[in-house]
Image (cartoon, rainbow, N blue to C red; front, top):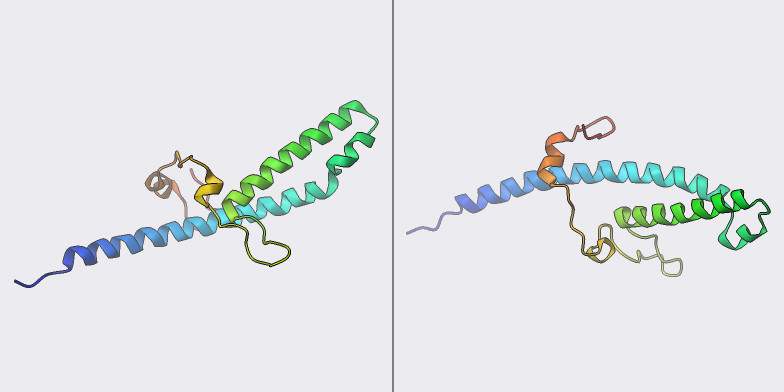
Length: 129
């Protein structure tokens, strides 16, 4: 009796289709994350360094600057989780990978990929409706 690979071929074709859809979603996510990173980098350039905040005389302005720095740290942390951390300055090699399970922690996505893909609008801005 000959072994048939029909089921395996069908599974592989389905897998390729799903992975191609995922790849497009990842490209869209990367584009948005890069856009956010550019905007946030402009803000980062305007906010004083943490060690310079103590020199701000106005208490409310100092508190706002500290809060902005906290939000910048959180934002850049999320960007690193999505895009991967920046390259090592000495070696030029990445110090991690995007969506690294270690970077993600023990959390899995609460969003089911199939639900996302069903609502994902390819082209345009890739917004979910």
